[in-house]
Length: 172
Image (cartoon, rainbow, N blue to C red):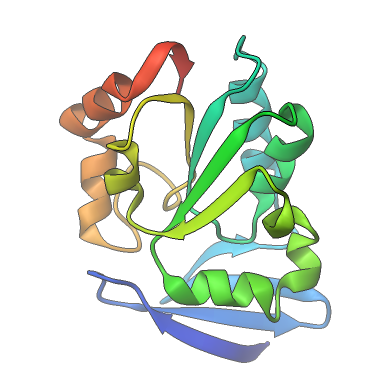
């Protein structure tokens, strides 16, 4: 494995590392692999299972976390040309990596006219409601892995705030 770059996580204690082995990429946090280009099934299912439940011709979609772009790329073909997708990514370097060493992985998804990539905490982006769907692809589960502040997203209060940010019939 070759380390291509490192980045601090705002409010976190550990450093993200972008690594490459041949054509395979990995984003690591300490000893934890957050994502790898070999594995994308959960992100694809997140997008598909959520968007299939929408009955909105021009949905407003929030994706929490850019990462390797699997959730965004899975969502794009499922959404109408009139959809608007905001991707909130906390770590500025992750966006830089997407346009740099990971450009081939992301393909043309970042240039899709429906997409707005914003460097922001998804917890704050949720507040710019209303949303038709919110796809939380933050950390590897309901505990703040990259930073303790992410625990709030999956707390009872955080989930209530996320639900309150939805339009009627919206899906998290």
